[in-house]
Structure formats: structure tokens, C-alpha cells
Image (tube, rainbow, N blue to C red; front, side, top):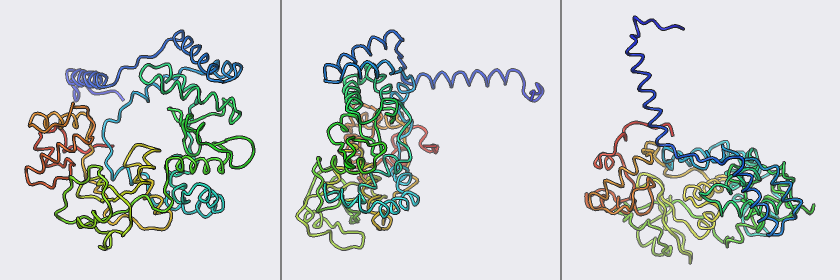
Length: 419
């Protein structure tokens, strides 16, 4: 529809266009540079990777065929460079992953595959609800493995200088998987970074821990659920899963609790009990001869967890506390437990990386060492926040709430995000 120049003067239109260009320019400046390879550069790199694979024991005919079909995927480089604009709050993370639909589906699959899962538990010591929980978080129970051609994705990343050695190793491992006959190269699909199958193993993990549980002579994590579940159990067992204990439990903290204790230290359950920690019914934590760490993923306003050795095993699968809590809580829910006693608050600010950098810079300027500003709300930044909070009679939980962010003059904190 044509615009009336009487209602939209030309200078206003030009001004709007100019502002749009400036906004696009600013956005482009914040985007990481995309240095794509030329066809010739990629071809040379593939030759080197092919030679490396042959030297590692891959049959030359297999390496030649697969590498000839590997394509350079600019989309993979874009995904590798992309950084989320906003951090994810614990409430958003958990609620997206542990929801009624996934819990119900997990319970149905727990019943449907009872015999298989019991066999895996007998062999590896990993209880069935945890196996189903990993399956649910990794691929939504096998409904989505990823659509990228793994050899092409890994060749693209191996030829990129940012993490070349890591992905070169993954590519060689993928070629070895193809060489052993586990799957045809054109069927080897996965995530953009090369994770594959029902439980999203990287190729090197596949080589070390995948098993042929159904006895058909192939380790097939795409089409064989017995292979996938036994492989998941085998991987967790290799990281010393303790079948005598759970992952952890939600607990209640006393009003005057010292949140500096939630810094990763491990204390005995007796020591935590002496500090006033109870279970969610107000009873003392169990009298068991094990150590635990305290995790408060959303500060004093949210739930608190005492986590055991199996929590660290879960983090050996994915180095994220949010992920490990989600696996443990989903396993509990699939096994029949109820929801959290203290749900995570949904109104906490989701900070952008730029806002976290502003916070870090402000903390440093005021004498609270948060390290080199990097936009990541890590342990050193949380320690600096705790110090700031403690000196101002705030609850020193290390989580920047709106009051603290305003004190630090962090820009844009009152504007809700879409993250």
C-alpha cells in the first residue's frame, strides 16, 4: 500500500531509514566475524584430514569416499560463532526441559521398555529413570537427532582454526565409526557439532563407550534402542556412577544461612545438617556417610540442592549445573516424585552478555575483583557479587538482583527480554 506523503513526510521516512541502517550496522558490529574458507582452501584441508584418518587406521577407500562427499557448511560456522544474546535463567532452562509433557512421555517409555532398561541397570548400575531422563533431554526420546551430515559438519569445523584439533579428532573418529560398519556415511546425521544418535554421543565417546547390545554386529545408536541405552549406561558407569545413591535432593536452608558455602565445597551430610539444612519436609538430611555440595541455581529466592557424586558424573556428560539438575529432577519426576518444593523464580533478569560485562566492570571499579570482563557470570564474578552484597547487608547469595544491578548502573535491566 502506498504511503501518503502528507501523513509521512519525506524527511521522516528518510530519518527512519537512516536509523534502521545505523541499527543494522551496530548489530553487525556485535556479530562475530565469519571467515569462510574458499573452495580451494577447503579442498586442501580435506586432503590433509584424509591423510590423517588413513594414518590413524581408517581404510584408504573409506576415507577417500567419505571425504570426497564432505561439503563445506557455512551454516555450521555461523552456529559455532553464535553466542546467545541473553543468559538463560534457571527457571527458563528448567521449565523448558522438565515439563508435564516430557514427564508423562518419560513415564510411558519407562513402562514400555521396562525389561530393556532393567537389563541396562543390571549391567551398569544406572537406574532406569536416569537413562530415560538423559534420553529425553538429549533427543526428546529419539524424536530429533539433528539433521546435519556429520562428516560435513566435522570437516567444516576441523578446517576452521578456532577449534581445529578437537574437531579433527572427532572427524577421524567419525570415519572410524563408518569404517567399522556402524552406519553408512549418508545416514550419519546429528547436531551441527557432530553429536549423534538417541543419546547424542560425540564420535570419540562413541568409539570408547558405544556397545552392540542387540547382538546384530553393529554399534548402532541411531536405529537400535538397546544399543543406545546400554551405551548410555556404559558411559555413565565409566565415570563411576554410584548405584547406591541418587543424584542429590532439594533441601531447605535456614534464614540466616551463609551462602558463601555454596561455592562448590563438599562437606559431609553431618556437617550440612549441623548448619541447619533440612529436607523439604523439615527433617534432617539423611544420616549417610557421603559428602555433598550445595547448589543454589537461582540464588536465595529459588530452590537449593545438596548434590552427591552422581551429580558430578552427570556433569561429565554435560558441563552445566543447569543440565545436571534437569537430568536429576526429570529422573525423579519420571520415577513418580512431585515437583520442586520451591520453584525457581520466573521474574529474575535474563542478562545480556553486554550487561554482565557492565556489571563486571562496575564491580572491578569499586574494588570487587570479578576478573577480566567477559560477559560470563562465573564463579569469580559471583564471589565479587557476594562480597558486595555482604558489605551492604544484602543476602550474599552471589546472584545480581534488580536492586544490585541498579546500584551498578547496568543499562537496560528494566526492559524484559524475549530469551
